[in-house]
Image 1 (spheres, rainbow, N blue to C red):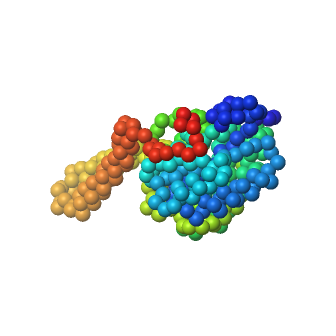
Image 2 (image 1 turned 90 degrees about the horizontal axis):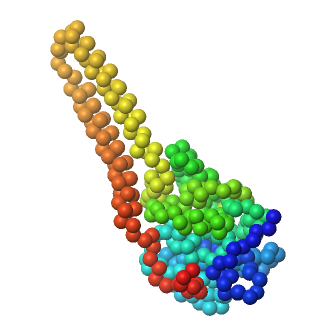
Image 3 (image 1 turned 135 degrees about the vertical axis):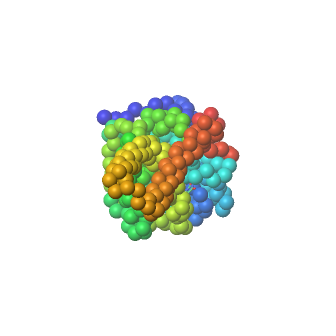
Length: 333
Ligand code: UDP
Ligand code: MG
C-alpha cells in the first residue's frame, strides 16, 4: 500500500510539479553550536543514498540558546533551503520546543530527533520505508543504551516501571521521542490543548498501530547532556502527574487503611481500659500516631498541591512557547 500525501504548506510552494512526499526532521536545540553541522552532514549523507521517493526538511527549534547556535543554523540554511529554523524567545524546555516543532513542521511525516546523533539518522530510511508501506507510527526502540551511564539507565528503567504501573495508557519502554509519526497523528497531537506536556505519553495516548525498528543508542557526538538529575526528576514528576490521577486516588485507600487501623486500636484501648482500669496512658504510641498521621497528611497535601499547581498552569492558559522569528517557513504554516 502506498501512502498518498495530503496537500500541505510545502506542497503549495511547488504547485505545478508533482508533490514530493516530505519528511520533517524536528530537532530541538539548546546551546548545540558544535553538534549542528555534524548532524546536518550526517543527515545529508543518509538521504543522498536513499532510493525512496521522499524529500526532507530539517526543522531546528532554537530553544533559547546563548551560544552561536542560531548563527550556525542560519548560515547553513542559506546554503541549504531544506534547513529551517524556529527561534523561541527563551529556553522553554525540550517538550515545549518539540511542540513548536510539530506545529511548524510541514512534512507528511514527522520525526523528532536529538541533534547529538544519539537518535542516529541511519535508522531514518528504515522508518520511512515502514511508513511508506502503511504504518502510521514507527517507534524507534533502543535495543541498547550503551551511550548512557549506568545510573541513567537504572533511573530511567525504574521510571518506566513506575509510570506504567500508574498511567492509564502505558508507554513503551526504551522508546524515546525518536519515532516517525504520520501527519494524521501530528495533527491530533497539535490539537491537544494541555500545557503540562509529556510528549512520550501524548504520543502513545493518540494510539494507532505502531511498527518498530530497533537501534543501538550511541554516545553523544559532541558537547554534554543538557539534563541534570534535578531536571530529570522534575520531568519524571511532570510525566506521572500529567498522565495519571492514581497518586490522588491512592489516598482513599491509604486513608481507609489508616482509619481501620485507628478504629481497631481504639477498640483495643477501650477493652484494655474496661478490664484493667486506666493505667498511665502510652506516651510513645500517642506521639507515634501524631507524627505518623501528620506526616501522611502533609504528604497527601503535597500530592494534591502538585495537581493544583498544574491546574493553575492550565487555567492561566499561557502559550507553551513564544516564537521570536521563523526562517525558511511561511508565517501562516
Ligand atoms: N534540548 C532542548 N532544550 C532543553 C534541553 C535540551 O532543546 O531545555 C535539546 C538538546 O539540544 C538536544 C535534545 O534536546 O538536541 C536532547 O538533549 P540531551 O542530548 O542533552 O539529552 P539526553 O540525550 O542527555 O537525554
Ligand atoms: Mg543526548
